[in-house]
Amino acid sequence: VTDDHGPADREHAVERYLLGEMSDAERDRYEEHFFGCADCANDVTSTAAFLDALRASLAPPARQEPLKTAAILERWWSVQARALRALVCPLLPAAALA
Amino acid sequence: LNRHPFDVLYLERLRAGDSDTERHFFAYFSDLIRVKVRARGMAAALDDIRQETFIRVLRTIRSRDGLRDAGALGAFVNAVCGNVMLETGRAQKYAGAEPPSDSEGAPDPATPDAESQYLTEERKRAVRAVIDRMEPRDRELLSALFLEDQDRDDVCERMGVSREYLRVLVYRAKLEFKARYLARNDRRAAAASAPVVPQRKGVNP
Image (cartoon, rainbow over all chains, first blue to last red; front, side, top):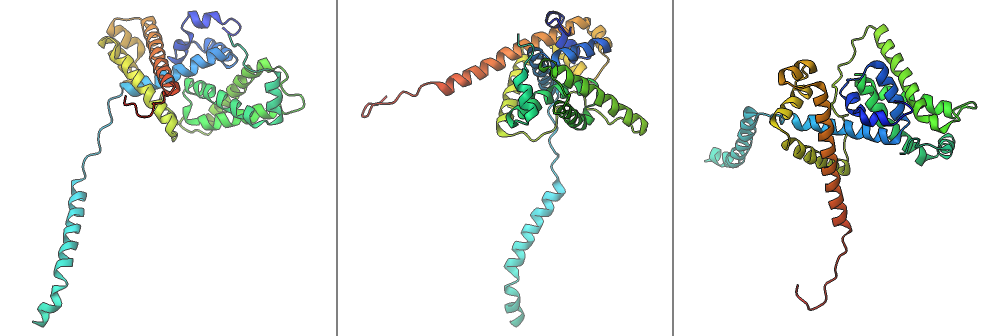
């Protein structure tokens, strides 16, 4: 595989390599080849990127974060309480004087 | 065929520390080292292996009796990377450390810029289109292999296909993806370079 470019094309070498279907010796030879061959290097990196995208696309969509009801209620209540205090507090001194 | 992308001039520039050449060198071999390291299930140590490989290669190139054959640069980087990986594996073994969990196939976590994010989205759309056109059985086959991490022989036997079928399936899907992805990019480039026709004053279109 190292010197002859042909077998890499004929035997689906990229797919076999990236699917982990080569023997150790085959894998070593193929790596030696594509590190020095711009065409095969391009094929290997683009196929690897394609497989990454394929995995990502096949994966089910990530679940949405569940609504944190308690936190939302607490926040709502603190806003209401602040508004109530703002409404009531100015009246307190007058009420006390009356 | 562009068999040897590196020539004497490239090697000279690398030796002299030319920044553009160094940038190309790092980008080109980073991708290849990533593929090689992941193929050995050592993605968790990728950054260390890559950095050490580059340090050793550049040190050799810049030494007095360093690499002289530009055509051998790729093979040299591959050999150095292989040595670094062996040493990393041994060091982990002697340290008694559990090999770090390796999420095979997971893309490298990196903060993408706007351009690369756009390209990623484009790529995802093209891949989605390829998947949508597949036979349900082929989709199921790929899901079982890539997502559920099932034994390949078991999956192939259960679905009544050979390992060769799987290779060809991936190969054809890749070709279709390339055709779609490149076609999209070509259309985008054509639209961007389309001449703007100026409108004459007082003439409503």
